[in-house]
Amino acid sequence: MSAGQQESQKVPRTERGRKTLRKLLDAAASEFGEHGFHEASISSITRRAGVALGSFYTYFDSKDAIFRALVQDMSEAVKVAARDAIEPDMRPLELERAALAGFLEFAAEHKEIYRIIDEAEFVDPRSYRDHYETIAERIRDRLRSGAEHGDFRDDIGEVEAWALMGMNVFLGLRYAIWRREGDPGSAEVAASANALLARGVAN
Image (cartoon, rainbow, N blue to C red; front, side, top):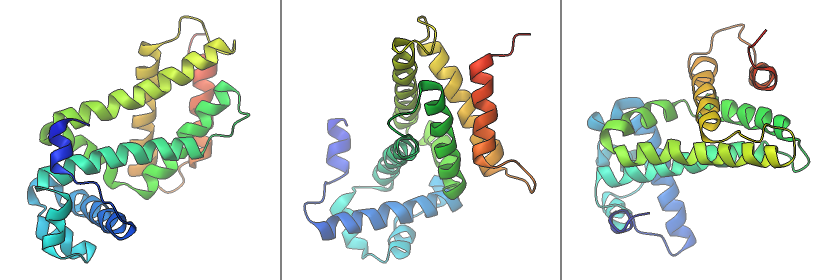
């Protein structure tokens, strides 16, 4: 986190403060998700959170600051969703299937993430870039670990990580955000994507 970001978001020192911060971030997710950055307001966020307006400024200097913090918070939530879906004894390929299924479940429960992350490209480009670079780095590390275990090619790296992330992002868009009746579930979508990863598309 940069010095400017540290100044615009204060770290709570008490459990009560942490709960208030959580309420504000959750309310901001709903507000920005429903109305977008420009139509959202600090007063609406605090009203949703059930928090006094003055309490907002205990933690954030501006609407921009809470938006930036929210993007970081959502990036961390994506990480946790994938991590929680993974079992310690999974082989590398199975691990990627589980991580994708975890993300799809998360996106289905938090549909606002797509609108907020997309809007970050224009509201706070640094946070937008950090979000995707951080995810790609985690995928790259997993792929390289798989290569070290002999499950993946030795030359697999950043290009493959970004390609895999792109696939995951659009599968989330189609099967979590734009989900239709009769669509396969998260586990089935992840299994199909995993088969593609395992075999490739060459005949």
